[in-house]
Each structure stands twice: as C-alpha cells, then as structure tokens.
Image (cartoon, rainbow, N blue to C red; front, top):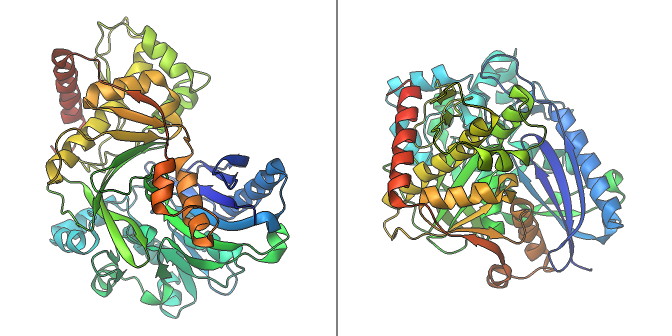
Length: 497
C-alpha cells in the first residue's frame, strides 16, 4: 500500500474530497458547492440528499485527479460541519426533513425557556456547552416535535439521528455502521463529556429517545467499510472528527497550551487543555479536542458564527467585490482616518457574548465611506472577534502566560493583510502553515495513522511546518483605541446588554 489516504471534508457551503499521498502531500482534489436553504429569517437548512451526491462526486473527482483507483486508498478520514442535525429512517435511509444547520436559530425561544427553568448550569456541567440554538440537541428536539409522528417513530427505533459524519458513514457503508466519534458527540448538548456517554437526564429534558442515537467511538477507530459498489472497491473508514477538532489535529496542537483558529464560514478558536477539563468563567465552551486510544483530551473553544461568510456577503449580498481575494487589496486602500466597524451578527453573536437575537450592524459611516472602508471593516471584524476569544482563553487557562502563538488555517488566512491585522489586534504572533488544508489533513492523519501507513502523533507533530509568521506591528495606543471602538460597537448591537 502506497500510503494514500482519502479525506472527506463535508463543510457548510461545499464538500471536498482530498487524496493525500504517503508524504502527506495533496495528490487530488474534488470540490462541489451545494444549496443553502433559508426557509425563514434566521433558519438555515441543507438537503441531505444533495450533500450525499456532492460527496460521491467529490470523491470520484479526487480519485480521477490523483489518477488512482479506490483500491489504492488505504483508508478514509471524515471531517464535517458540526452540530448540523440529520434524522433518517432506519429501514430506507431516507431523511425525514432537511438537515438543520449549525447556524440555524429557530430554537432560540426554546433555549430561553430552558434557561428560565434554571437548566443551563446542568447542561453546562454535563456537556461543557451553553443553552444556545447553535448546538444539536434543541434542533433535534424541534424536528421530533414538528415532523408528524417523528417522536413516536424514534422511540420505536425506526429513526436514526446523526450529525453529518454519522449520516455519511451510514450511507457509505450501506446502512451497516451507525456510529459517530467523541468530538461530534460532544457538540450535541446531550453527551456527557466527563463520562463519555449519552446523558439520560438531558435526553429526558429534551424528549429525545435514546433508541435513535449512534454508538460513540474514538477519533481513530474502525467506523466501517464502504460499500464496494460506490467507488469500485471497499475502503475502511478509520478516522472521524468534527471540523474544528480535525483542524486542531491537522495543526498538530497536541500539547496543552497550543492554540489554533480556523477561518472558514465562521471562525473557531481552540485551545488544548490536555486532560484538564477547564470550566470557563468567560462564556467559552469546554469540549473534547480528540479521543485517542480511549484517552480524552479536552479544549476550550470560542465560536464565531460569521467570518468568511462576511466576505461572501460583500460579494453576493452587496456586490461590492467580484472575488474574495479583492478584500485585502481594498482594505489596504481604505482611509485610515475613518473608523468603520461591522458587527457581523447576521445569525446572532457567538462567544463570548452568546446573543442569539442580535443582528448585524455597521457603525462609523460617513459620506466618504466606500467599498474599501466596508471591506476593511469586514476583515477587521474577524480579527476583533478573535481578540475577544483570545482574551477569554488567556483568563480561563490557568497556565496562560499571555504569549500563546496562534496557528491559523482556513480560506481567509491566504490574505496577508488580514493576518497582519490579526497579529496587530491580538498582540501575539500568528503562524500560517505550509499546508492550509489542515482540517482535511487532520482527518486524513487519524485514518492514515490508524491504518499504519502514516506516522504516529509525535512524528506527525514534527512534520508541521510554518510558511510565515506575522508579528504584531501596531503601536499600543492605536490598538487600544481600535479595540475600544469595537467594544462600543458590540455593546450597541447586543440585545441582552
């Protein structure tokens, strides 16, 4: 076996399949976008069947580009958009409803009701999460309550619940494997992360039948074997992790205190805390970073809902750019005398504010404000939000010394302007790796190491390479002034202030 590993990276707006060779270099890529469905304001859905079709297409395209057959692949690793909910019939495999996406806010009032019942502390203690529509549990509860007969059918074992990884594994294995991994389970709001099990008390509160839940495995484990008819040969699925945890692994953040931030549709910062399950005092999430060989490594996570999506809005919503790469060029041309702030609360605000009802706003507009200043505001918004997370993590992490280097990945990090402004505003070094496909790489490493064709954890960490480091250059006075303006803009946007 030549050490080829296939990573399926099922994201929020597109599906990618990447073939890595034995030296962990990309041999072939297939990528396909799919439809974003917005039934109501604040609601976001995907068609699971369309996602499945994009997976099949992307895998075949990646194999073709790599000039390989399925029999050349040693293992498959899967990484996925987390928290998105799919429910399907156990017999037919047919979804009973569109997938409800992690960005969806339809259960905001239900979350508030649970908070008024003083239940948030219980959920946080068991799951490390907050009562927010972001997580899977309340979405699943909504689906069971609003699809006719769903809850009764689920109780009889006729329905299956899964995050996207579980749905794809079910389909890939022809319905033989009904499984997930510990990282995806940890984002559902119904998984006890201290005891590594589905939590009966939380299931009862949300009225979710245990009969519809998958088995939870380690991140590098035997998840099943693909049906031979799909790609021409059966391939073992040996690695699974939610996208942010996969990126943490791909960035080789294996030591406590190491931190990464991924800039895709949203932005997600993860700080490895080792075996220490840190309880945040600053509205961050305690989550499972990965589970290997039965040993759980924990993390603090901060979730920002809108990052690259703000650039998409500039392109598709406002029409002031034609391609994402223009934003950095325009930001460079922006008038430095204009302080324009965009608070991109298009689907509410995530950590550390957690305001589901907040909506986007822009401040500081003048008659002279144009596309350049708006582009700069959109890019700076990502940096300001990262600073909010960075500060919260430094306060929560008992071993923090204020000098944590931030490893970055995702589509936005290709912009030198954005990465320099990020380093300036968080006042810390920012490291961009040579391999930017760290999410797919993390999933591939889980599978490849399990298959025995890729290096172990220690050797993989040594292979991580930096393409460029961005050092802070902004003077302290300017930084403080800009951060003060950001805090004021957020304060004006919050509904729960």
